[in-house]
View: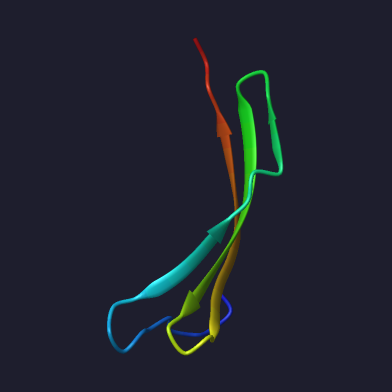
Length: 52
């Protein structure tokens, strides 16, 4: 969290998610979230593993 309380006045957010690594059932995605006025709210990384 880049802000103490992420809020947007009208319910809209801009989300950027980029696939950094994808291989053998694994994926890593850095993400950023901004409010409508351009304030950065959240910086995060999501990791996913798929098991069969």
